[in-house]
Length: 133
Image (tube, rainbow, N blue to C red; front, side):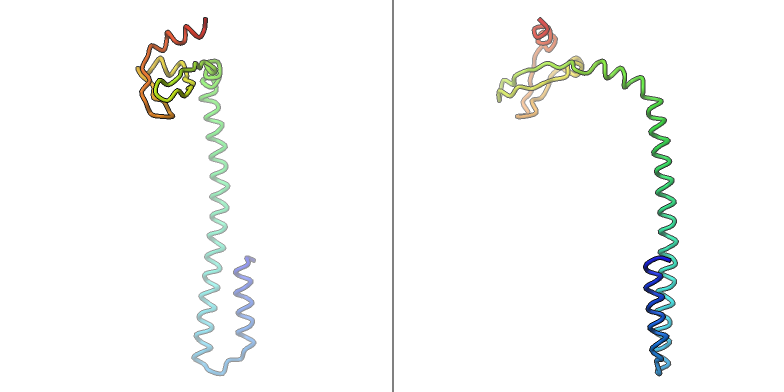
């Protein structure tokens, strides 16, 4: 029994023990308690549905993780081989030393300094070759 249901049962017991003489007041109190009982029942049903949905979502996430691992396992291995190809450049505007991914430089004509948002234009392949030497 849920906590709400037990509280409603306690209120029902208190109301039964009052022996209210006024019939109108007794009817109102009984109607309120009946409404509370109905609400407690609906809340309990919703809690059960939420628990069931939570279990289903966990199962779906596990399945998606398995699918993701199956589909992208080879690409992750390739990415690991390509990691570590960085070179450093100094921003001509602010002097900040910035590390760029060499694969990014191959795809971009210019790079932006993250510190001052100044465009850093240059031949990145020459800089990479100079660093390798």
